[in-house]
Image 1 (cartoon, helix red, strand yellow):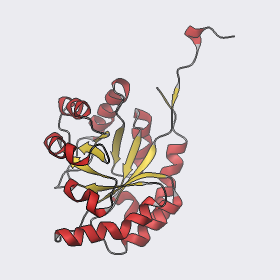
Image 2 (cartoon, helix red, strand yellow):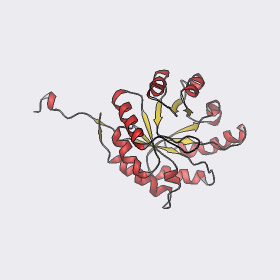
Image 3 (cartoon, helix red, strand yellow):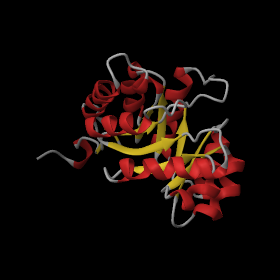
Length: 218
């Protein structure tokens, strides 16, 4: 029998997918249904259209059953004040200040996630505030994001030290495996799924296969 010192370190569970919807809402319900049927998805982040509040609520309500009936959580991209009325499971907040402002509005009934974290200190503070997850690597409003090496380094640092789950944003299918290997609990995919020429079902199935093969040490 191997000694305790020689025992292999425990393995982390394979990361799960976190799906980010495109800005273009045309045919979204069908594309979502196809994606969710092709892979295990933990959560869907819904980008709301630039319309009035009632239109945004109706948009989310129309999509909620498609998402939630698969067991995935439906999160709004911002707009925490609409989460309850839209039937969403929570919201993703852009930055520490937005998380702090919305926290009491969402908790304890709903999920409060946080991205757009510019520094390690901001990420740690988000965890202390009570974020249900932190996200690293997502693009900003202009489409810019940190260098990929910096994203993987931030994910590995977080996974080694903190209990709060980490979502790592993959801008392409090529990025899925290294982000998972770095220790992400969830890998976010968006335009690389919905813009794939093969169709969203094939693309997300590829991402799911990569995650299923990923093993990282705890």
